[in-house]
Length: 191
Length: 183
Image 1 (tube, helix red, strand yellow):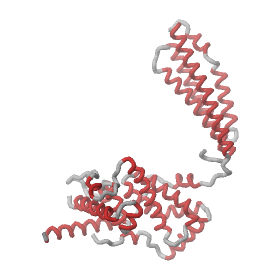
Image 2 (cartoon, chains in turn red, brown):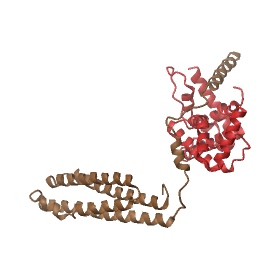
Image 3 (cartoon, chains in turn purple, cyan):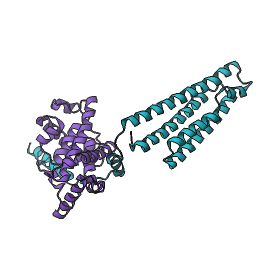
Image 4 (cartoon, helix red, strand yellow):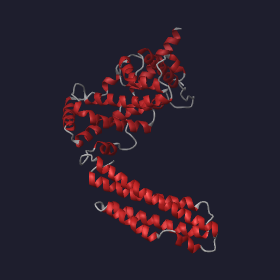
């Protein structure tokens, strides 16, 4: 697969939408809840899709989506519009989900920074010839470390260095996770 | 070897297409905004620690009193039942503190605590009435069958429900006096 930045298209907006969003951000920064609700209505679908794919479960994804918007509200006065609001919000959501995963890490060391050994210890996804391909479901069934890297890299267009910074993994480990994720998904595609 | 590389390329292409076709937006199963709005809502007044502490202390005190009453009432029927299994059930009720008096005290506490929130007051008083009715029925059943092991835990649960109602009323009072929605 090419290393194309697929996520670059995620927050593409025309100038009219951008002006509207910028105005909403300014009002939300002035603590206007209605404006923040409008921003929520604009972005919740994308943020929830991200959380759903990263978290791998509906319940956790909803918690993370909610938490991401609450954290965004708290951090909004410090947002300097250096990047698009959607990108900024996206990164907050990624941090929220990874924060949840780090909590889980304390219980099960799925994200150990020990290269391929960690990948080998991950549970294999449920596979079967009769299972119709549902990529979202296949992604949810990936081992958590592989899922995180695959979603961030192949779907959201993050670079390995950025993923390494977000997850605390080594770049080499990220690449290994990606390799494994693609291999497992390819197997599902051709099953 | 060349065939293997070709197969991998075909699979990569299929995966790339599948990824590109993923929906960019996925709606959650429920509207998450109400939960977010609650969490980001501004608090009406400044946080008053002393007031919260006083409220919590009064909730604990009422809870302790109710627990003591509950234990006393639970032990009384059991003790009498041991001495006089089923011959004088009326004495069992006579040994316990007056239910009417206690009910009036609890209702007064709820009314006082929720005087600024009539709708909550109505709900809590209705619930108190239900709990008191349950207590009466359980006590009647206990008089008829003192050795029934299922009745005493049931009665104890009703007393706990009473304590919960009073605690809820106290929390309403804290919220209305301090403006803190979720202490």
